[in-house]
Length: 123
Ligand SMILES: [Cu+2]
Image 1 (tube, rainbow, N blue to C red):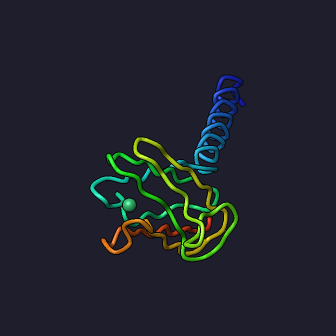
Image 2 (cartoon, rainbow, N blue to C red; image 1 turned 60 degrees about the vertical axis):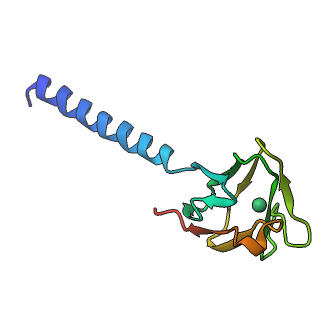
């Protein structure tokens, strides 16, 4: 075999290997942001992958909180909401697939609520 062709095909193999590695890395974990603005969560519905992190940012000039309807590790619940003061933020990692409904307990009567859907990571 012509040695130049041999070296070129080896280079192509290496390039493909590096490309697949880098796309694998970007699939490991992502950080999503949800605004708290005008007494609404934006987006109100968000789909992430297991292992991703969601950060809520309070852009309102009033305090909000976050309370999940079911208990899971690290999550504030209806009995113990996490207050997110104006200009502050709160982050939570979602490790298990499922549907996670939450509300701002302070403004629950104003329908301030959201859903996080967590999917399995595609392999
Ligand atoms: Cu609120």
